[in-house]
Amino acid sequence: MQIPEKIDDRFALGQRGEQLAMDYLRSCGLVVLDRNWRPRGQGVRGELDLVARDGDELVIVEVKTRRSLAYGSPVEAVTTRKMRTLRSLALAWLEHRSIHAPRLRFDVVAVTIPPVGQPVIEHLRAV
Image (cartoon, rainbow, N blue to C red):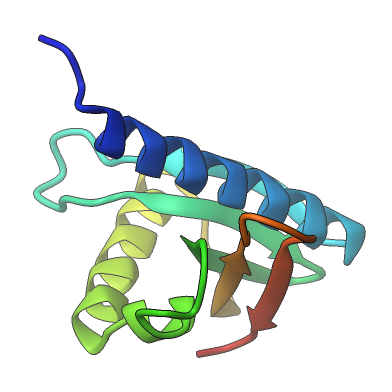
């Protein structure tokens, strides 16, 4: 089965956005602990784009990548429903790793990669 080109292109865009976000977070001093984590058999579905540490805080990072703002900011794609899913995934990640995180934060990194010019990265902390 062949993946349609449009889907393959969106996947590549998302992967590039995640890499840019990870590089950006590392340049800000965060330590990336995990990327594209999916629970296995824990009753929770979805994926954590990035899990990082910022000092004593564990940071769950949702990365949204777009080519333009024509359909709105990438941040607008992070809905209340998505945040609920991220919370459930974060708990599953902590359980899977047997980690107690006294401080947990949820961030969004919005990446806009225009056809021409440099990517723009917007980091929203504690959304």
